[in-house]
Length: 182
Image (tube, rainbow, N blue to C red):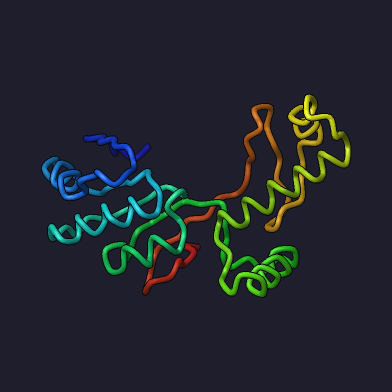
């Protein structure tokens, strides 16, 4: 909408043989104004580290896939300032989330992340559907028919394809923490 354009896309398959130095060099040769990583936390952190080692000060963004504490642990200063769009609000004060958070911390001695909340919500949606029908052949349709479920951070709705529609939040990594951008 603001006239930006993608000037280079570089794909790779995650694995032990990725050469992040070469990926960073390829990106930097195009002289971008910013870099977006659509990869998991490990690959995003390794890519950011190589950009950082090359002296890059480019603004970085990443997909929600990378939005786990692992990206911060592995990326350190290289991911400072990275912006990520995600549906998970670490600062949620909703009672359902605070209850989930407390139980999670007690059991795992760690803060929950988006995969924890997504898994919790998915399991609860499944249990709700199983309350209506235990026939595996109709489970998908049962989920779609119910369509609205209670989650740790509020209700969510499944569309006709089974995708959920949730509010999203922008976060920025500041001082080694995800901070919600208001």
